[in-house]
Picture 1 (cartoon, one colour):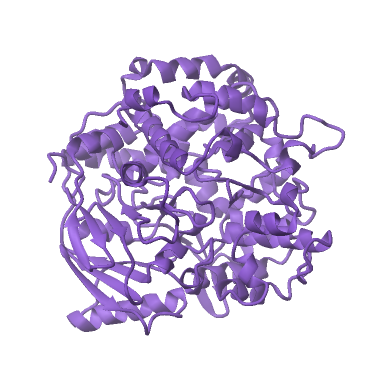
Picture 2 (cartoon, helix red, strand yellow):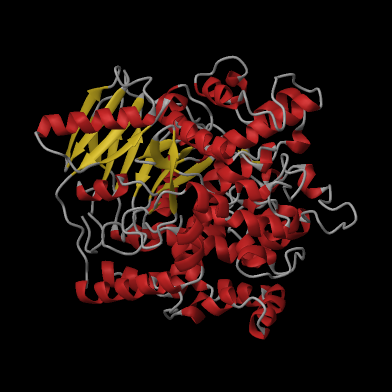
Length: 639
């Protein structure tokens, strides 16, 4: 148990092979150091992995973890995390999800599940408070996601003779057939990246359902309520979280990305798409969006709802629009809506699916692999996605991802991935700090684990996107900040308010222009803050997360402790990866992005990766091989 509020005080080990449940030791000192969610999972992997495990081995772990603010009513606090060894990358991965499973896991009185072993037969697990029931799922195996979720809800209702409020996790055919980028779905939201769904499939785990009647305790209800109310109002008034995201969702970024030259086009050959306006957030909002939706406890409501074949379903995010639009030279938005729904139903990551498709189209064009896929040709895409999910024909190889394909057929220079994980839709040659983030990200080519520096360089501020100056230190700071926010169980969009409103709403003001000019010179300041965090022993009004932790849990927290916890999380995750061979040699990008200027007339339009990597490792206090030293791990209290 725990002395802190916000937590349920219970972490459980689930042995699938033996259908046994036991307590996993997790102390209050662990809670102080790692807070929860992703950081907690990374520490558990660090303590249990030797480096000999593989993604599909029975000794691989799946950790489903929540944050202390989940269930307390904090804005955007419905996130939960799934961490495991990735079959796509061979290293640790984490996938964050806005579905309802985390909330109901805490209602069942549980903070996290540590899952090991393998079910003897296809199985779904029912969790009711502290009781676990293992049910055979042979009749669910093969079902698409919504069908299996509807059937599970029916069974729960039938057993209790009422409508049961519960949270679900389930995989589709892609997970069952161990497609390397299969997702786990909760409601309509996906824990999508790096193949967590395939690990579920390898363990014969079709689904999990959680329900319970526990209430999440709060340390100071009065202060917590007042803070949450004020915080919600701040988010609603901010130009990003109160205007752009509610109006168009992340899809609203298509147009500014086009303007800035960072919209991935034709497998990242270019940064602008001629027909971007046909697949933009504006068209989605005006012609297709039915209603805005949000995750539980979310005042932003960035999700779109669209009609696909007579059904109201979740609409596509920015990544899906960009990569299944200009990425494969398709200007038909209705097809993207359809494909997005089909991929969710099959249980497959839209980012990796789209980028693998784009690589295959270019490989076909160059004569490396004759596969029948071509840029601009859309008639066979739905069938191809189905073939991937069921591993039929060319789908069996496409299911392995772009790195594997490029190693077999050639074309490594245009396999747009890092450490095996396909990049997001932000073309980094005109946002070089984002390029650095992709390369050094612990889970591979991830825009979020990479620090999302594109918001400083192009999409919020405009701090010289081509210069490498200060980008390494800023990348580190943004990565640590995002780690910290994720630990709480909150959406990363809550961190957008760290940028004062006037900097976003008045981009041409003298103050904003001055800030943009100064940012490339802030590297030393950030370095000092990282080395001497005690100078930030205060609360920053732009980051209410620190007070929220104090009021909700009773745990002491300030800006210094908050960012230091994020740094600890990033370092322990890197230390896990080191056991599986990660080093500076793997912090790479394809040559298309580092050696070929996006604009042939402007040699600066490529990512100066090696220059920034060296500074980044110095900023992190890592050795020249890009790894935290034993001294660093001891300093961070990891060992």
